[in-house]
Length: 270
Image (cartoon, rainbow, N blue to C red; front, side, top):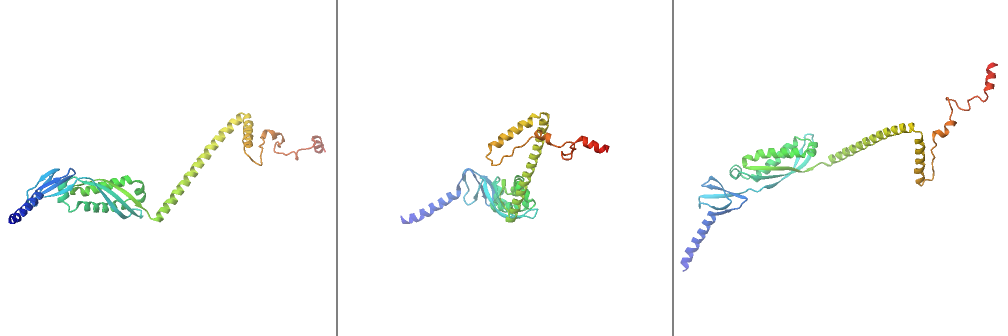
């Protein structure tokens, strides 16, 4: 009995090992790349896969989209500004055969290509382009990286510049520039308001000149507005019409006018 046990147990173990190497299960989001005696056969799956024992070997490849964090890179822009830029890329395997045969580790290779391309593309852009035209840079990065990873069976769908870290001196300079820009806009708006107000005042002066009673109504309205405020000193504006009779005529004052026309005539005759 003991001799039979020593014979049956190894046989059972061998059968289990053969079955384990023969029967494979491939999930829906995977593909199994099969090699027969080292020669590429092709992808199989999903589902149950049967392999020839000791002849065929299978390697699984995942087809789901992979999120790749590109580490922060020191980049010198075209206008000689040093920034640290990080990005994120999304890619997936579309050709399992190429992903296995043409490259050793497609994940690491894609990461290295993304880092070098990020430094190269941003080095050809200015800081203003990097901050203002992010969409164009993302599209350019995606196109270049996708072209380089195509022989590996990898499709890069999206590349996004995630973070741009500026030096402290550049941040202060940009803050001063933004403040100056806001002050300029405020002055322009104030000047436009003054111009519009002057035009309206000129139009109002024309209307009042055509109707003299308008200045009287404006005078009464001004007195009403002054009376509402709690002021210690009140200034009453005096219309010009009330003091017109007291003003000098023909450029001469009352002191310089002759006191008696008859006396002046006598002086001339004498």
